[in-house]
Length: 112
Length: 112
Image (tube, rainbow over all chains, first blue to last red; front, side):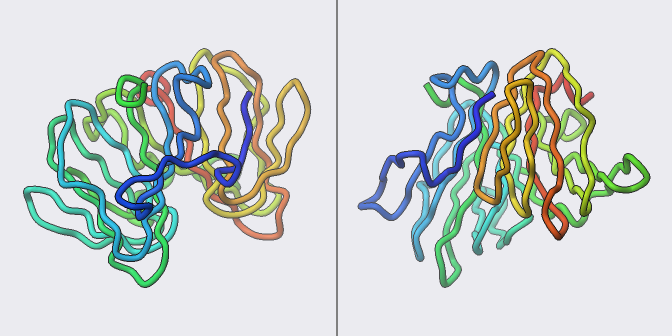
């Protein structure tokens, strides 16, 4: 068993520090099947509009996030979940007035 | 893409309503690899001390949870994560003074 707090996990920084990614549980920890990451989006930050051939399963922990896909946009808050299917275009934007956090789980091959 | 709120997902009830399980994203939604569930533990509630041959990846969303394994106990709060390895004994107990929520991700075969 591995138990920890996200605060003790060193973040990778993207887009001039506007987006932080922490691998909470991943292949290096012995995750058998999938990896759990926590993303932090500072106010106004966004992830790129992109795609890849694995899925995301997302849960909003804090803040207000606009979820963008080819079908449009949807604004969600704490308690929301998102399934991004393989090869589906997607983007997450912090449209709130404070930091946002979400969990994003991927199969191990999405987090080597 | 599937977007929703946990509040709109009908819960399964266990242990006289003390533990609620909501399958946010699972095989019935087309999850390719793994399923995301949200557990709600009322004050004093606990899951059974048990084991199975698949892993859990857990993130504490709200509340104060005691995590029990053969190695002992650890009390964690919002922002904590837990990797339960396959065949590892485990239990989650709400030891706080309010409702607790945690995300628990399993491979699809753990949530048919």
